[in-house]
Image 1 (spheres, rainbow, N blue to C red):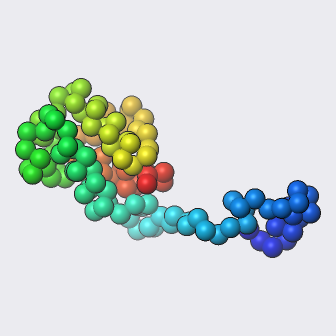
Image 2: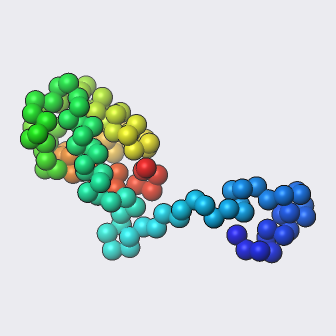
Image 3: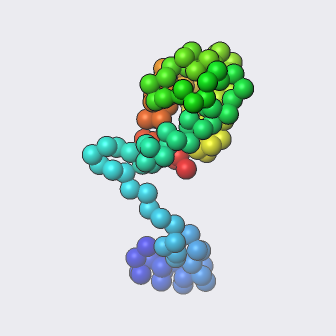
Length: 119
């Protein structure tokens, strides 16, 4: 925030809230070439870990980015449960229409990596 605005705010309200005065919060920049806000490799590792912890997964060590949900052994209900866990892991919420479009693990990874709000 520029100095003049901080001074105006200080005169008006007595003090500047930390949110405006502090530069402690990092600014998340999007990689212009790839369009990612979050590193896709890190997202993939975390997502595969979340998926592998589900009870219905047949062989957790066989999960790859190209694996489909049926390859992994997830029923429709188990898929929904996994997506809820992924939402919790990355602190985001998938719109229902987008979740229906995820055919492979990589589809979900790409979505999260391009999401501005993913943690």
